[in-house]
Length: 437
Ligand code: HEC
Ligand code: HEC
Ligand code: HEC
Ligand code: HEC
Ligand code: HEC
Image (cartoon, rainbow, N blue to C red; front, top):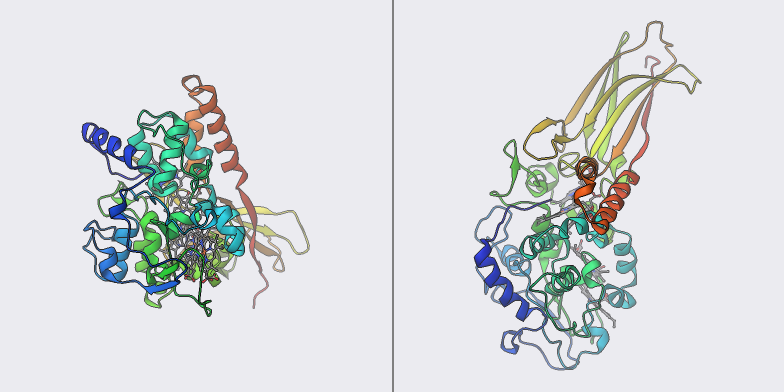
């Protein structure tokens, strides 16, 4: 997804040069106050700590409303400041930003994260595009895909962008951090301090990495909105925000019942973030009902389990087929098809169709059974899920202009397209007997 913010080129250059100088280190006077060596801090978030800046990332562009908004405005302030020099008493382990180092102690979170899409946000799909971009535009993408200053610096070096830092990264920045996507530290570490949710278990008296700061924002949907919701002045098609997940959630009954994004996407605090790429999530999102009058049937597809539209934005498409079969037969005939999703042309200028199902709403499909149908026959509701359909079309259209791309860009683009196609899956969601109840 692309955000709308554009930097005026001349101004952008000034910002970039300053940023280049500050990438690895920040002046020591701006380091946060720290407690002494080996002293564990588990402190509650206070507003003063995080309201030093007026920038607001509140999804509705409001001034910070409460402590959570205030925390998030600082936590996701774009660009994120470099971590700076680690506290001198930190071991190499405590200072390292490498997710695999966090994983030596936080074993389960690391395993789950590794298999999640958040560890793949710097895949070939974005990398081929970065090769065609300026540093300023690339940084705008990385705001959500690899947000740490240290990651942006490494990517700038890898791309050979003019303002890339000359020095080698310090020891706490592993060489591949830029390509590791949304790493643990992007969500949890600022200026070498850890932030996390209220612990669920008793904590030891002394903890590594100076303990951590409890921030209730981690258990709030607004934490995710930083990347999963465009601001009101963000890019639109047919006047609809291209990324509007948080606003859709706000209108759902789940928000009213206090069920956050984390309740469904991080159950038991698991770091898996399963979504449309996962069959069980899609099964959990939908319920169906079939009614029959004579040879006429109606199938209602109800979004009962997703806390936002099904699907939330233009990328995925879900094709629904109604398949009639005579009893004990495997051959079927397709009696209706429907595509659920927000279909937008590849220039993003025109909406072709919007059949997404809001949370709690239903979409009805009608069909006529074949003449002389078997009253003991069945109807299968068969789904074909294309989690990245919009990208497939976009990537194909660029592949058609392959002569304009260098070999490396083309190879990345081809891999991105192949990976997108490989995410397709299909299955029978429900089977109804036509026998009158
Ligand atoms: C040497 C072991 C060690 C390393 C390395 C380590 N941690 Fe921790 N961390 C702990 C321990 C122990 C706790 C206390 C809570 C617990 O036991 O889970 C903790 C607590 C946390 C918490 C607070 C959890 C809560 O309940 O809110 C976060 C967040 C965290 N660490 C993130 C990280 C990140 C991110 C990294 C890597 C950049 C990292 N840690 C590296 C040992 C470690
Ligand atoms: C406001 C946050 C945000 C910004 C800024 C952003 N993205 Fe994304 N991007 C997302 C989210 C969220 C997804 C997941 C949507 C999905 O595909 O389900 C995504 C998915 C993608 C994907 C598909 C997944 C993959 O890795 O193949 C590509 C490609 C992509 N973005 C490229 C870009 C590019 C290029 C830019 C800059 C022009 C950009 N994004 C800027 C949030 C953002
Ligand atoms: C996209 C942001 C994000 C990333 C990336 C991320 N976390 Fe978390 N983490 C969270 C959120 C949000 C919570 C709180 C979830 C909740 O309370 O429901 C959390 C909770 C935790 C906790 C507390 C768990 C508990 O059971 O109390 C630890 C420890 C932790 N994360 C470590 C890590 C480590 C290690 C990594 C990398 C392998 C990582 N996180 C990556 C957002 C993130
Ligand atoms: C710093 C930006 C950022 C933050 C914060 C963030 N995400 Fe994401 N998220 C992304 C990007 C980028 C992707 C796309 C990954 C890809 O496909 O390459 C993504 C993907 C996902 C997916 C997978 C969707 C699919 O297509 O299957 C889910 C689910 C998700 N995020 C949920 C969350 C939740 C819940 C939170 C809050 C705890 C959160 N995210 C916080 C950037 C972010
Ligand atoms: C009540 C449970 C629930 C809540 C709350 C919820 N989701 Fe989902 N989410 C789902 C299910 C189920 C799916 C899979 C079906 C789908 O794609 O809509 C999903 C899919 C997704 C996807 C995959 C892409 C897509 O187009 O659907 C993203 C990204 C996502 N959720 C982000 C979020 C964010 C961010 C929030 C909070 C603002 C959130 N979700 C709240 C259940 C939930």
